[in-house]
Amino acid sequence: MTKKEIVKTISDEIGLTQLRTKEIVQKTFDAIVDTLVEERRIELRNFGVFEVKKRAARKARNPRTGERVDVAEKFVVTFKPGKEMEERVRQLEEAAAAERAAKSAAASPPSDHETPASETTAASASSAPAAASE
Image (cartoon, rainbow, N blue to C red; front, side, top):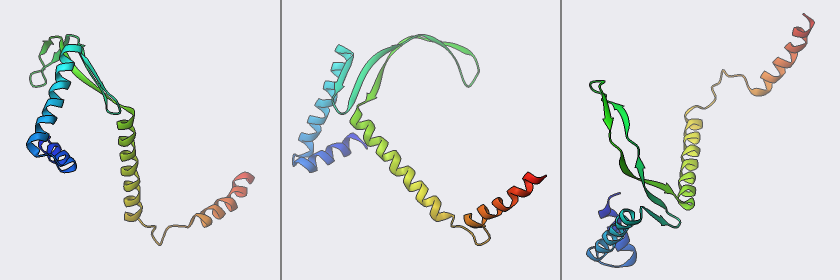
């Protein structure tokens, strides 16, 4: 989803013009960035926490040439999702897993030549005494 799509969705939901909604969305993003620059952390309840962290200098390898290169320290923005976001994403994962299981079950019905579980159990029970008598 792009910022333009976010603006359209919000505009449609609350009845503001897209131009006015775009201004509000942009001001929100600007406020987040300004807070990160000034305070290095912003916590948005039920959404998550953005934080500026310093990544230490390190040695790396150029994948094309294999040559070792020094990578300078730098500041990076990290994001830790809030509990509500994590819960909703977890529900999405569970729904996707259930859907995969349903498709898998539908795609591979039991074939006619497979032995039913009840016959397998009976066969293994009758062969158990024979193995014990040896």
